[in-house]
Amino acid sequence: MTTHPAALPTDHPPVAAGRIGVLIVNLGTPDATDYWSMRRYLKEFLSDKRVIEENRLKWWLILNLIILTIRPGRKGKDYDKIWNRERDESPLKTITRAQSERLGRMLAAVDGRVTVDWAMRYGNPSTESVAQRLVEQGCDRILSFPLYPQYSATTTATANDQLFRALMKMRAAPAIRSVPPYYAEPVYIEALAHSIERHLATLDFEPEVVITSYHGIPKPYSDKGDPYGAHCLETTRLLRDKLGWSEQKLITTFQSRFGAQEWLQPYTDKTVEKLGKDGVKSIAIVNPGFSVDCIETLDEIGREAAETFHHAGGKNFAHIPCLNDSAEGMAVIEAMVRRELSGWV
Image 1 (tube, helix red, strand yellow):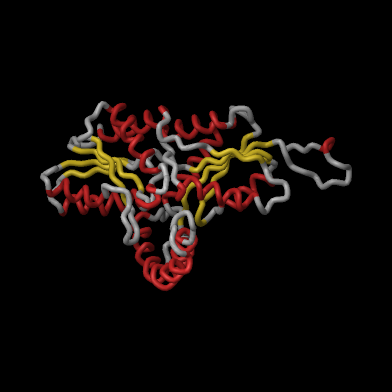
Image 2 (tube, one colour):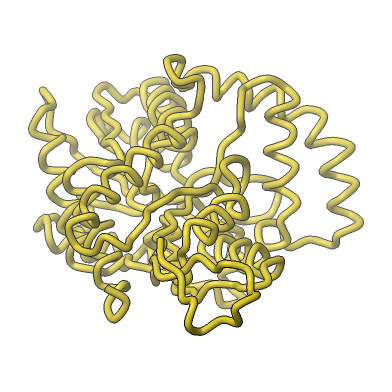
C-alpha cells in the first residue's frame, strides 16, 4: 500500500492508493439451505428489475405472497443435495473462491500491486463489501470480471450495476473497467473443447448427441435486443467447428425457465426427453454458459436431466463439469484479466 502525500494538503487524512484490484463476480448463493436463508437469497435475486421485467406492484404481490412462501423450502431441499458439507457452503462459493485464490497467485508474478478478490451479485460476500475492502487496501483502479461468457442484461449488466451502486456511496471512488463477454474468444473455445474431449475420454460409452445447455432468459428479453441467445449460438457454433462435429452431434438448448411466459428454445428438459423417446441411448450435457458448477448444473442437469433421459428410455448419461478452477478454466480467466489490465500493469 502506498500513499501520495505530495498531492494532498498536510492536514488531509491519509489516502491509500496505488494498488490495482481484480474483482471476480459470480451470480450468488444462499448462506445456508434452511427456509429463511433461502428466502433472503431468493428475495434479493427475484427483486432485481434486470431479472424480472414485470409490473412492480404485480410482481411484489406474486413474489411476497406466493413464491417466497413456497419456493424457499423446495429450493433448500435441492441445495441440500449438492451442499459442500465440509465447508458448509454451496459449491459455487467454494469454486469461485478457489478461482480467485489461483488467479491471485498467477498475477503476483505479473505485478505486485495487483490484489484479487471475489464477490457475489446476490448473497455473500456482497459486491459492496468486497469493493469497499479493495478500496481500503489501496486499490484506486478495479477490474471487474463478471463470470458470464455470454452477455445478458440479467447477468453481466446487473453485476456491473451492483458494483456502481457500491461506488455511489464512496467519497473517493476508484476507476473501473469491466471484462467484456468472451463467448467467442479462442482461449475460451479451446478450453471448452479440451475439457469436453478430456472428459469424454474417461467414459465407457460414446455419446450419440452432446448438448450445450445454457441458462435461458425469457423470449421477450431477447426480442427487445438482449444479445444473449445469439452469443450462446455462436459459442456452440465455434465449439462445433473446433471439435469437428456435425450439427446433429452438438446441439444447443436452454434450461432453468421460470414462470409461465415463453423462454428461449429449445428447452433442455423437453429435448432430453424427446431424445430418449426417439431411441437415442447415449448423451452428454455440457454447460458452456456457467463458469462454475452450481445448483443449475449439478442438480438440474446432473440429477434431473439424467432422470428425465432414463425415464424416457435412454441408457447412458454424462454431465461434463464446468471449467471451474481447472487448468483450462484458469487459462481463460488469466488470459482475459491480463488483456483487460493492459495499461494498468
